[in-house]
Image (cartoon, rainbow, N blue to C red; front, side, top):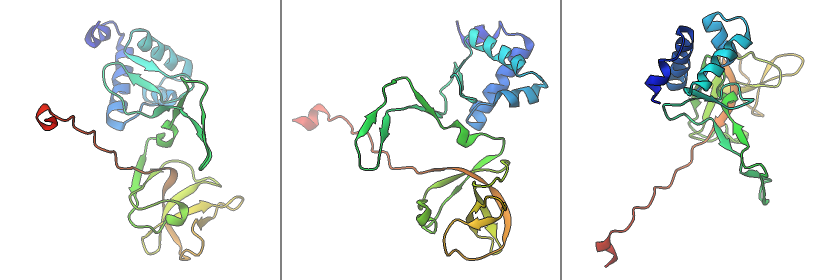
Length: 214
C-alpha cells in the first residue's frame, strides 16, 4: 500500500503527529522525543504519546529503534543517519575486537538532542592541544544547562571563542587550554556535545571503457 493509502487510515490526531514527526525529521534532521511530542500536542501522559507512535508504526508509516529516544524513521523518505552498526572496538594501534552482536547499533542522536542545536566551524589550530583541528565542527547545544564537568564554548572580552570547563563544586568557567589568555567570559554560546571531523571521501573509480582497454 502506498504512503497516501496508509495515511488515509489515520485519525486526525495521528495525522497531526505524523506531520509533526515528518517536519522535524526532514527540516531539523532528527525526530522529536516523546516529551517534545507531548508538549507540542498537550498530551500529558508519555503513554498517550506512545499509543499514537505505535499506531503509526503498526500502519507502516514510521519505524522505531528500541531504547533510542529519537530513533524514529519515516517509511517514505531517506533518513539522515544518526545510528550506525558497531563493527567492534580497538585500542590505539591494537587489533580490532569484533562485535559479536552483528545487529548492535550505536546512536549519536544524543549529540544533537535539544531544540536549539548548532555548530561552530573551527578555523586554525588554536585548539589543537584539545585534539580539535582546523576544519572540525563543534556541536553546540545552546539550551542545555551548564553543569560541572561539561565543556562550553564562550566568548571572552575580546569577542574571541574560547573553550572552557565548568569546575566541579564552584561552577566557575576555566579555560580548557593551559596557559590560555586570562580573560573575562562575556557570553556562553552553549554546551559542547561533540566534535565532528570530516575526512576526504575517495571518489569511486570510473570503470574503464572497452576502448580504453584496447
